[in-house]
Amino acid sequence: MITVIGLGPGDFDRIPETIRSIILDPGRTVILRTINHPAAEQLAGMREVAACDDLYESSETFEDVYSAIADRVLTAGSAGPVVYAVPGSPLVGEFAVRHLLSSSTDIELIPAESFVDAILAEIGYDPLDRGLQILNGHQLPDPMVLDKPTIVAHLDRPEIMAEAAAQIARVLPGEATVTVFAGVGSAAALRVDSSPDRVDSSLAGFRTSIYIDSEPGGLVGAVRTMRVLRAECPWDREQTHQTLVKYLIEESYELIDAVSRLPDHEPDWVRYAEVEDELGDVLLSVLFHAAIARERGAFDIDDAAEVMRQKLVRRHPHVFGEVEVGSAAEVKTNWDQIKDVERGETRESEMDGVPSGMPAMHRASKVQNRAAKVGFDWPHTAEVLPKIREELDELEADLDDPERAESELGDVLFSVINLARHLGIDGEVALRRAIDRFEARFRAMEVAGPVSGASLDDLNLRWEQAKDEG
Image (tube, rainbow, N blue to C red; front, side):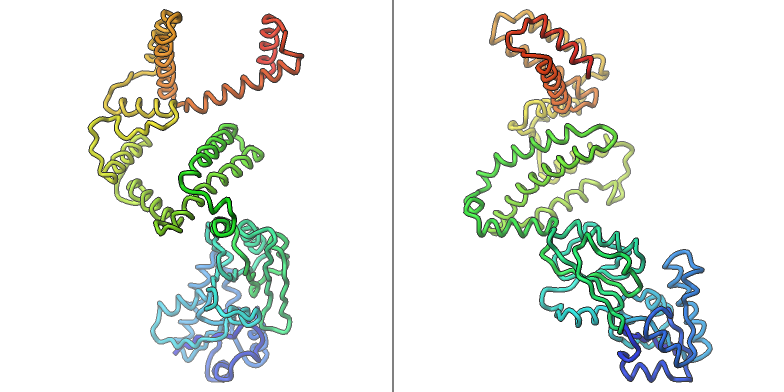
């Protein structure tokens, strides 16, 4: 018979009498997961025990350690009654116990006070109030959601504790406070309140945890803030789906502008900060629309997110299913086919479904791609250039006819967008960068002196100098 018991979170005198009688029984062999625990050290002074700390040194991974501990306990159990004693409770965070339970049915498991119980007693919190989340510091979730009281445990090393604190700080408001518990349940216990970004990682240890009970930051915090604004801010209350559309469009273009300034290769953290800010503004519009829909009983942000998640799974059968693909082009083809099936679309024309309200450059590329899918396209990029020259000649022939010139200029632009599509270049990005270059060079011309009243020759000279300077 193998009896698995817990030593509680701290000193030996916290252990209930029924468990003490078991581990002090001279007729039983006692194996400790670790001697590095107050009750374990005190027990070792009362009777002969065997510890498994050597297995931590000889094993390459934690999984190897747990398996080796289980093997040692099972081997000892085959020779006589064995007590396997673990810190805290055998039901909380004891992975070797899982191995034992899956390897033998001749095991008696006796629950005990865990570090969770000790922390809750210290805090004075009932988890049935607002819930409780317990996280392993070695395996923190990503994204991390801190929308309820949370204990982050297994902070056994300074680097693990520092990384956990950094992740916590990312998703909590700046004014938030967390509590570090070290050695809870023993005479040497420490309780230290700290801001998340100032947690003392030197307090790390086998019995160290961080307790968090704060208003959430991050995405959950943004959702809650939006709901408060809808309830308490007169301007926010007045908004509707229709009045918010213009802001979504404006913020989307500002995001596009920030993205277009990102360098192609090496990260530019200043530029990324701009993208982060603008992406947050677009997210605000999304949350605003979701909050209004929630009030009307239509859907919530979680519903919209779940619809999107299901859509991603359906449209990526090569990732979440059995479909095999050989290229990104095949992925795109599958995506479009699945999208049509989802919408139940029966197109009368390949041009159906291209929104007429799209920006003209994007719409042009979209309809060209639709035509290319049925083979109506130039097979080689070089063949597009003569078409552009042809359209330019037609434009030149109609310069004196404004109506005809408008039509021919449109054809020139449409052909140029076709060239961009063949080159794999986003025409919108290319044009934005060209505008940026022009603006920067013109500003350089202005630095050289007033431009108003300057001769064209002088302006051209300054332009060429600005181009040479970059």
